[in-house]
Length: 273
Image 1 (spheres, one colour):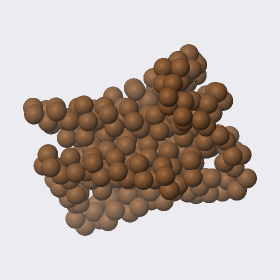
Image 2 (image 1 turned 180 degrees about the vertical axis):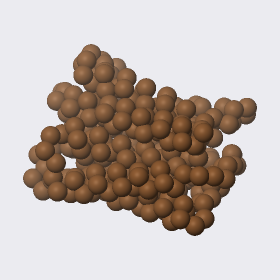
Image 3 (image 1 turned 120 degrees about the horizontal axis):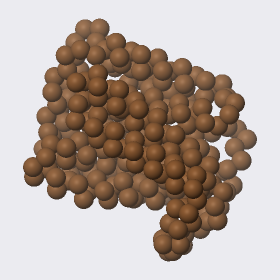
């Protein structure tokens, strides 16, 4: 069951990150998107076939992600998904040295993650209060980073915080029953994250926006798996390999998210009024 969940999460990561690459390539070339004209902005996005293909790929990847959560613990699914950031780097032509390091670290982490598979204590469902507090804290953090970071990085990081919150709500909702009340929350998180991501795409490069979003989307739920859902690490070699794998995929994500020194998107403007 866990191995099947791991496989689904890897395929999901390829679909989601490939979709991000297509969306960025399209959105960065569109006229400025405006928050005060949401229908006009959405029309500009959805009438672009390349962007629409990327969007549908991301939706398909999210469906696979939900299936992975039914079969494997949240922290394990997120660690596997983090390796998908390599798709963002591979979609942009020649790689910089930092990007090569990032891909190597991410793939090594995935290999160790596979070696760490074995008996996994089941995660609990998490208390409603803990999930709600996590969601509220994520929303506040997203609002803060938009104000304090550079535009592309700020919106990209905010998107990652919100997508991660949506993933935590998804894990809570897949328990069924009364937990289905988390469905509106996860839809709201993903909707706001979608807006932040498109705004980021017009203000920064692919790895400096989607890369940061993927980093936080995968890192924060790993932490939530332990804090909110009580997931414990296996002992011995498996536990050591699991921790090392988490560290490597995060190092890989950070390396791949570093913008080039001569980034050409840094001065891009975007009207959000």
